[in-house]
Image 1 (cartoon, rainbow, N blue to C red):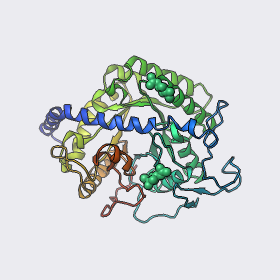
Image 2 (cartoon, protein in one colour):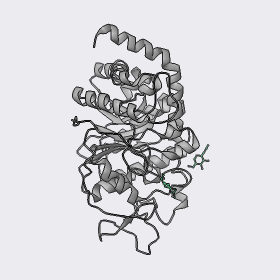
Image 3 (cartoon, rainbow, N blue to C red):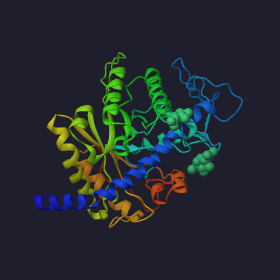
Image 4 (cartoon, protein in one colour):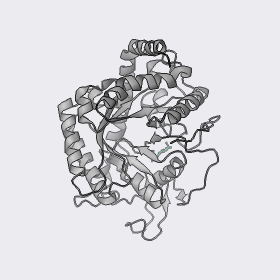
Length: 381
Ligand SMILES: *[C@@H]1O[C@H](CO)[C@@H](O)[C@H](O)[C@H]1NC(C)=O
Ligand SMILES: *[C@@H]1O[C@H](CO)[C@@H](O)[C@H](O)[C@H]1NC(C)=O
């Protein structure tokens, strides 16, 4: 791409920066609430999905079927979805699905406050589907078994997949401590072979909920803790924030630069969104990371199918198709690392906020591919 084109992109980004930040903040808050959804769970379901003090996560959360809970791999127990459908542990390939995504963001259904009515059975069904799209999953929190059940599903399905779990960070130290402890328990139980890295917080700096010093101190603590547990593999630790929030202190504190980059909130027409994303990411994130020999990854990028337009950015299924055809194939060809936002629609966000917030899925929440969507023919690297 030519140099003048590049400065046009940046100019248009700067113009929309304020709006962009505001709306990205809104998404951050929604994610915050979704992850805080785990808060009540540990207390509500003391006898079902208990996280106890001896580093032993009891992952059973099946409907009350009278069966004894325990190691689910031991005796071929049956799992059920939230609507009581039994879950089969074999994967029947869906011909419409292709492994075209480097990675994908996944928010399990019903893992929301104060209900936390999610089930391991649903996570298994989700992972069966996601395994046909990518090998890499990014998750937003540790509450509601969001992350350990994803690892459990990968194990039960015998898949070669990895996750990036997030310790959710807000201004509540109790929340941090609980999520931190759950992460450490999970790592003790499952090891780190299926963990590509650990994220401490998402958009925390943007929301200004803790100071950069406090957040970066936590990154250092978690890095030290996990990497002194005796695993051969070194686990990178980082936070994720707006792509525009990367400065020298940020670069120094993170093993990898993870950046949320949303062309939709930049008000960019879909035909230009792919190119805009690379320009924005290169300038704000790749450049400072490369300067010190570090890697950069797009932690969120996507396109919604319904809800309010944002300048020249219009939400629709045909536009999602254009975005997939352009961004996914360009990114794969150019070897960018990215986690697509997101797998499923999230109707609960729609009920609480707007249509737009709930409409970023490639699939509806019933796991059906949105009508008319064809995954492009460009396999991920
Ligand atoms: C679980 O999620 C589904 C799909 O969004 C929803 O229809 C259902 O009411 C939820 N169940 C509970 C118990 O929250
Ligand atoms: C922090 O979260 C805990 C539950 O995790 C809650 O009991 C407490 O009231 C919260 N503190 C503040 C200051 O909101």
